[in-house]
Length: 468
Image (tube, rainbow, N blue to C red; front, side):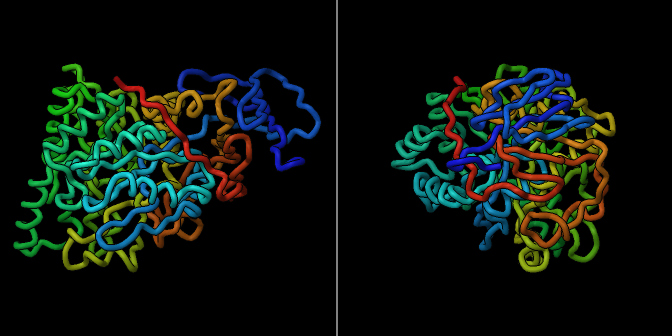
């Protein structure tokens, strides 16, 4: 696909059904110079153009995962993916942009943390990327560093109301973070669980000898998450800050967000593909098998799934992410074999999000195609200052495109995944549809489940603050 002087050849995607968050129509898409330059019927390409026949297939804007962990020190170990492996896994699954949580510990300075996370991705990622800047303390010097990070192209923060003593902030820090975000026009993403309730319930369960993976849910039941959301909503209402609830898992938490939205709070809601298709019985599997399914907030009772799907369909929930955090089952999850609080949290899903959402959402009639595109791409682009460069199919947008084959049938397996982790939470699950061609800024990066792109070509996406 390279021409002279390493310049990409033009690309023409023909005869596909283009599906955006608001439209469906059949047309050709011509791409040159990394962007979409023309959309029309029956485009005649210039000589040397690479042509992809998308007859019988959908053409979606590149999907955006607004919540991933690639570089992640956690509980004394590290998540298994690197940007080399994680970005390739993302691309074969149709995700062309990652927004990673940059999470320095309370002992580290924000600016040093940002530069460390950036160094893990720059020159290594095959897809484009940006960050939510973790604010894990608000002390002397923090404000100046956060202002510098925003000036360098970050327009969202991340805060934890959980993980006491590690990432969690206290209420004074929460208040000052939100006030600064309001001033700068930055949106604040937040992990909402009451850390005191979690800590006390963990102690009680362990003291009673309840140590297995299934007890993780009991240490942080829905009321704990709902209280965390309520707490954040109070502070957001008083400061006027725009907030984004990450990984919302249950109807109780959603009710708190909706109530705040009705009061005028600027709140956006994310759920995860895991909550839509898995439930807490997976974490209760016998032996230590349940550890594969331990994450926070935990998988919930299956009755919550209909609530979440309905929230997506009706617009009450805005985005679907993964909170991708891969830890090996054989060597890392067993850190918590005798104490569930020490199980590294995470259900790796970066590679499977789009196909599971299509299979269990679109194909089951739970959501339509436009909603699918909106919740997996366009809404994240709009919320985090990437639209219309990303999340759109229109002239001038980056040529991040997914030619999707709805006729494909396959089975998920750890043996074939590109994620660098030793298990799949969806082992043996059938999928109905798969990307056949995925492009990043006009270059084909994946074909039929195989990575064919360029490691290191991914760009850091600088974003402008925009929430006021």
